[in-house]
Amino acid sequence: MPAPKTQEKSFRENVNLAFDLALATLDVPEKLGYYIKCGNNVYQVRFPVKINGEVESFIGWRAVHSEHRLPAKGGIRFAPMVSQDEVEALAALMTYKCALVNVPFGGSKGGLVIDPRKYDEEAMERITRRFAFELIKKDYISPAINVPAPDMGTGAREMAWIASTYSAHKPADIDRMACVTGKPVSQGGIRGRTEATGRGVVFGLREFFRHPEDAKLANLQGTLEGKKIIIQGLGNVGYHTAKILQEEDGSKIVGIIEYDGALYDPKGLDVEKVSQFKQNQGGVKGFKGPKYIKEGALLLEEPCDILIPAAMEGVINLDNVQRIKAKLIAEAANGPVTFDAELILRKKGIVIIPDIYLNAGGVVVSYFEWIKNLSHIRFGRMTRRWEESQNEMLIEAIESKGHKISERLANKLRKGSGELDLVRSGLDDTMREAFQKMREYYWRHDQADSYRIAAMAIAIKLIAASYEEQGVYP
Image 1 (tube, rainbow, N blue to C red):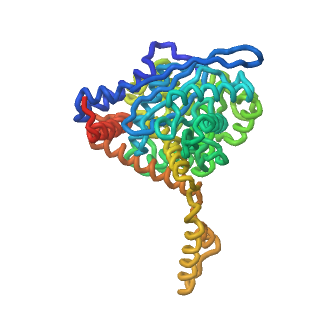
Image 2: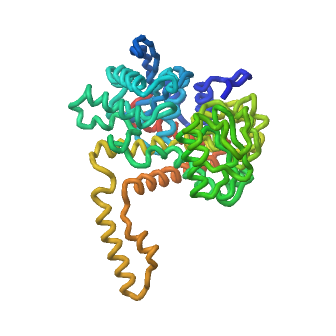
Image 3: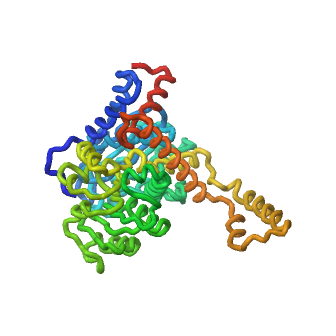
């Protein structure tokens, strides 16, 4: 997305301004509030890597915003525009996000200035392992202190390399596989992690529509079925969000925005076909059928029920905010709506479900993976067959009384819960509970005039209580 032309506040300033508004709704000591807002520390590293006979220099950061709970948690981003300001802002969001969804982590984030598309797999492995080594030396990767995860430009492959590097340097650490989450399942990962952020977005939207009075705020009603949705960014988060909404909820994905343009069809797009085309061709340009829009950002301004920005921060800003016509904006990405733009959107009656809540699915399932690695056992391994035998006895008991159960229902009842079932159940429960807390605060506090302020206030209150209970005072 092109940078906004109008002078905007920085990403970190946007996060801190939302913090200030939320803090004003609470009875938290001023100095303690200031301490919570400011990051604990930032580590900047430069390192060389020889690639094709030439030495290239790379710069990266790992920011720790809060250690009120350990380990600190947050992804590692590989992108050409990564900056210290961005990393610090993302670390702060992680702190508030974890508190809101009741995940016992502090907030952290990492970033490396690199365009992964310019390097082959061998080069990327060497760069990733060297970056990991630099962080390991300073305890910015550790199962007990700081646990990275995938983010933009990284995935299970990079997490496996990082875990392998940590294991090579810390072989005596029995919990070494918990040093990073988002790994392949074969390397200690957990089923459901790849889709977690996208599925968390869907669970959050479903919960929103379970409350008619909340949906009414956005001039919406009913369920997600038939809702016209535009997705910005068909990466990991956008793809899984769109696919699940289309296949499980009956939503109509009318627009998909990518870096090389956008596709629009009021009758609905086939998400899987568009995704396959993008993987093969590197973009959406040339996809046959729907309308192609070269300036993809223009599709953000098309009328729709739900607009889901699922890529970069700041895509809805002072330059385009007046032309946004969506009824509901669901922030699947971090910081896609700037602070000043949100003030205008709220005046227009457009509701925003904030990133601090809706983007939390990834860290929730990362928490499950971390627990799995510490316990050294797959979820469901000790209980699945026992559950199946108990359910079978239940079916027999019911049928012995003359009540015949259909084969379809019986098969569902017989099935014990495996790892994926438990992960999805835990994620659903977490997203439901967090939304209910957020909406309750929103409806009860006049000063909390948006979900974002309500969510932030809940997080600040919990973090402040944690510090006070530990005896940490300003």
